[in-house]
Length: 192
Image (cartoon, one colour):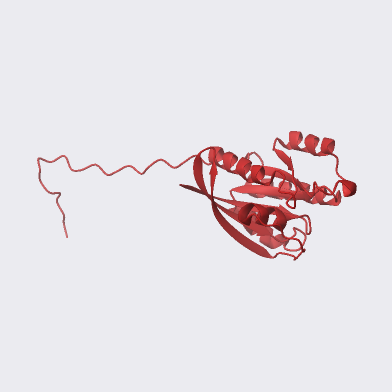
């Protein structure tokens, strides 16, 4: 079974923990409690293949910038989260993406998903689908509009990222076994 780690990044209060907990535990976190760092692990099946996924839920980007650099350096896939009900959170995601590319290399196609949360709050929506689609097309990454409360498209986010990581990080080939001595049944010579 292959193992991957994903990092959930975004501004404070956008629903990173609600999204992560909904996927990992199938629970909705009703009250906002600022996260410093939470790690979750789960075996998931994507396209008939089991994968061990570790998800790091981070603090709001503006609170622990130095820690984010460490998370980005060690991360293999990224979920960039913003709130559909808070346009300013989309700008934060833009700077986080730039930070990822700076750390991982400008030319790399790092596995990444753009996620708008709080889709169920239709009366509070500030970010249009057209703006999100244009951004996702320019960045060449998939985008999802989700609701952790209603469990809308939450699983799809993580499955998409796992597919990207499988493609970007191909399985390591098995290590070649050392060839045995071609002597005629003789033991190898050992000098001490």
